[in-house]
Length: 266
Image: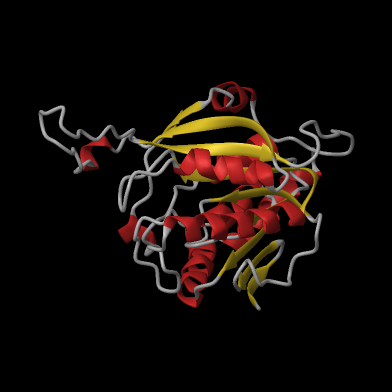
């Protein structure tokens, strides 16, 4: 069900696995951070299911994501490297294997250094070789694609600057995470993450999807960069938060008019 639309930005209150709002082959880029299965308290999703069930859920949504991408479309998948809550699991490796099994091709991985080592609490066996935990304070952004990596540039506009291109093609990104309290969501990522993915991997005319919209950060980045954006979120409360963020933080109505005006002068 369409929850909110203004200009080229749309929010759907729906389950991505059951949605009927997207046509196959209609999306240029997916930027998303799916549930991690680490017992985060969401309103409408159980984030503590058996790992085999989590992998099956991942297979389902990745298959759906592959179908809605157009040929040459990309996926920027923000996931943990691994997890130890509920048992040690190689989440990044397992989800990459599943993504390739449903058709995605692998391009590269960006390491996001959140600089959150101070929040670490799990050490395993303290000062002992008995059972220490080795935990990397980073998250991964797996960059995958459908069909062909190279896209035609004819008739399309890139808006990334020289400085941005040089900095962001370095596969280690260092910037802080987002405040859960500020945005009202238990697992937000900062606008900087989707903004970089969008400017680096899409043309201005492209359509970007986040199938797990959460607090709306990906759509906010779409508004800030002048892309068409579609967000799907199963929880109506989070749809409301996303809408409010777009209208407040994005100053969406005025912002989209300004961006379109700038782009038309290029």
